[in-house]
Amino acid sequence: MTTQNERIVSGMRPTGPLHLGHHFGVLANWLKLQEQHECFFFVADWHALTTEYADPKRIKGFVPGLVLDWVAAGLDPKKCVIFQQSQVKEHAELHLLLSMMTPVGWLERCPTYKEVAQELSGQKDLATYGFLGYPVLMCSDIILYKASAVPVGQDQLPHLELTREIARRFNFLHCPENAPFFPEPKAMLTEEAKLPGLDGRKMSKSYGNSISLGEPLSEIAPKVKTMLTDKNRLRRADPGDPDVCNLFPYHKLMTSPELCAEIREGCTKASLGCVDCKKLLMESLTRFLEPVHERRNALLGDPERLWAILAEGNDRARAVASKNIADIRQALNLDF
Ligand code: TRP
Image 1 (spheres, protein in one colour):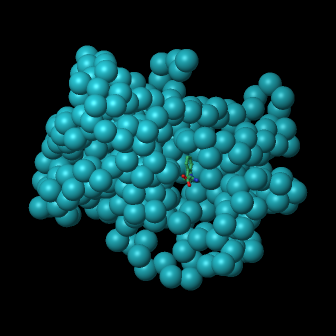
Image 2 (cartoon, rainbow, N blue to C red):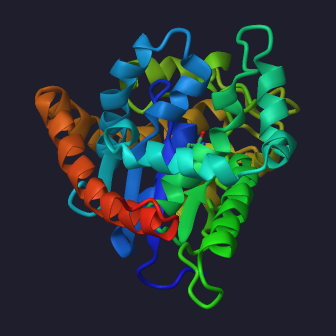
């Protein structure tokens, strides 16, 4: 679907350690993209403030933590630009400029606005100006680099739709018709690689059903033992159904296709029990996580390295951002 050499931008909010759900939902896609495209991946620390404004001190630790998770997973600072949003001030300038031309109605109508505000209404007051403007900041992050594609999860699609609308409005207001300034960035949906949590619900740290990328294997093993399988398979001799089992989606992502086929047959013919199936999964998890943990430990022994990766990425991002913002100022007659 994607042509060669797109410019890609994506970000994550630094709100805590990443887990396997994040890996297969978003990061796995980033790892592939860095091989082919010009990629800018950033820590969206200003975005984290929209919900953490009253108690922002935790964000500071989560910033290098996120970079640690990324690089341990295989993101390579030689192949992509890894940077921190708040260190490239052009994001804030563009956010301000775009806020002047974005109708409030567009933002109020954004489905995530009401949903998230309602979801967190007991804990946080999100009737703020900044939270309403979340999609304007996200739009700035993307079009500041004139990105053509944005790899995100399904939940971010309304924001991307707004990004395109705002870009179109800027082009309409400030550019000749035959020379639009911003491309309208398209969504690159992560292939449906939903990994359920250990209990079958959505994987989330707050549900206590996740496996984080930095978790020691010795702590993962007992969790795997308690995972739910096909609840209709009461005895070892009963045939099971991998398609309703909570373990099998893990195998599909981490176990070889040949072994997956064997597992499917063993389960449906009752020749493979759930205990043995879990042992196989532990082997797959070990194979998957070992190199991740190795890179992680190397970085933990050299914490300055994480800040150095960011510092270099910030410079590279800033070089592109400052050139584009100069052109934007000019288009708006603000080039004094
Ligand atoms: N809103 C995204 C999220 O919560 C994070 C984000 C901020 C982002 N700016 C972005 C993602 C720009 C893609 C592009 O996950």
